[in-house]
Amino acid sequence: MQPFSAIAVLTGQPVRIRVVRRPAIRRLKLLIDDDGLGFCAGIKDAGADPFCERPADRHFSVCRQILGGSFRFESTSQALLDLVEAAYAGLPSHQLPKGTPEFRIELRLLPRQVSPSLVEPPSVQVQSGSGLLCGVMDPSNYVVLAPEQRCALMVASEDMLSHPYHLRYELIEFAVFTLATRGLGLVPLHGACVGLNGRGILLLGASGSGKSTLALHSLLQGLDFLAEDAVFVQPESLFATGVANYLHVQADALRFIDDDKATHWISHAPIIRRRSGAEKFEADLRQGHGRLAAAPLKLVGAVFVSGQAADDPDALLSVIPQDEIVARLSADQAYASGQPGWHRFEQRMMQLGIHQLRRGRHPRAAVAALRRLLD
Image (tube, helix red, strand yellow):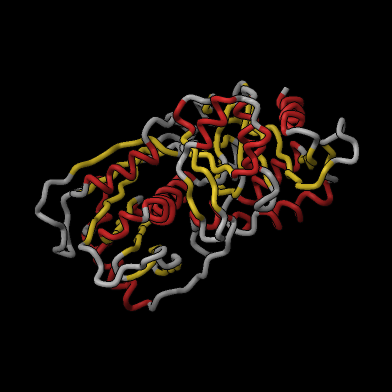
């Protein structure tokens, strides 16, 4: 089973998987497991330091409820904790039916590298073995996770602070998403989710199909916004949760926005550049331009968003035949389809039914179609 990658869910791009040599992993695991030692002695023993590397400086901490879990971030670096706050402060505190487990992530800042990357950091490579998961950029920038102990260590060099997007999404979020997925038994999906009155609709489809644009207009039209790129579902209850911190919008999507305040909000947001080369505005959803889902949404269905225009602009939705649903879901969610809980999730979604949504004359028409499914 391949380890979960926040990068795969967020971008839909494949990541390279490489298993590290077992002797090295075994030595790390012994440090973690022996008598409860290690950075993953975790929440019960936050002061343990088997590597004898913890700085003597004062540790600061930030606690946030994310994806139904209680996360404690610890670091001697205020700059790293500021990135945590940029990602997770001000979000609704979602609680899932199975309780609120605790997780701990230590953030450690190393001195600047001698030869830092001038353009962007190296791509993350995911490694796994003996109960540990690792996301590695280079020897000075990586994450080590012990899901069973519900904790992680993230290490970053000072020069990575000049790449906050990569640091936040590819290292910090990698740790958060992985721990929450394993600790809460969630199915991680590459997609968006909006809803109304506690009911939610999954927006699925290939990158570039228009999910983000549809999610944006759903927000502007008064629907509850749960997530844009990554949705996490409890397969038994079908409650969905996500991180509604930023919305990523391409410049050409602005032409469909009629609200001057919303246009100003997005067009004045920072621009991020993904590894695919795509540049997008990163608009902060917590600035009050719509309603964030205050609690997990109960899924009542899903739609595959299509980039194709509808033959009839008044009939954007079509039902996907039952005998095609399994293949469509598995093809769209290559990573999630191999995870625990997938088959139960698949069965539940087949019971609800799945639609295809083609484009109309304006995104407002697609939002109206979603409202009909949510009624």
